[in-house]
Figure (tube, helix red, strand yellow):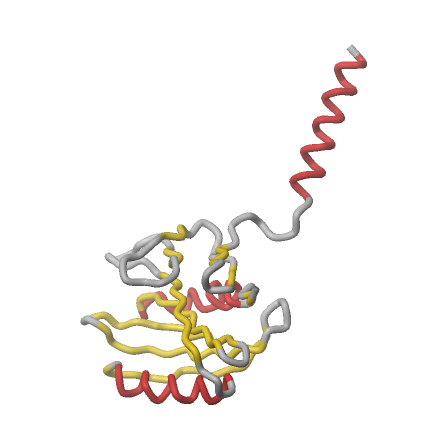
Length: 170
């Protein structure tokens, strides 16, 4: 009987040890071809979407719309600030009722410099709130777009910001 208790105690200790180890949860979205990863919000699904180069993360749908996170990249040899400025000018021309709510610089958990634009605009008849997060190195820049319906968007700002703090270049 005491030997059996000892085996059970050892198993419990191993389970506790392995659950507590490993740092990041296995929910990290790693895109080998893109050279980046990030942790999507807990409970969100990462899916392939036709026409997108990288998988996107989708939250639970409300009012026929699922909040989502998408990543695009391109070659740009200028600074990150120049890249953000150019994208901001394009966004202002591209979307109707465009409002820049916030522009801020931040750093990821790994110390990667980044810039976030929080905007509201209209697309395909819907009012959206979007956070555009810009990351990059000397020649490759990444734009991560976090999108929600405007009516709920502000409540997701912190969730999007938390996820983007985990963005890593590999």
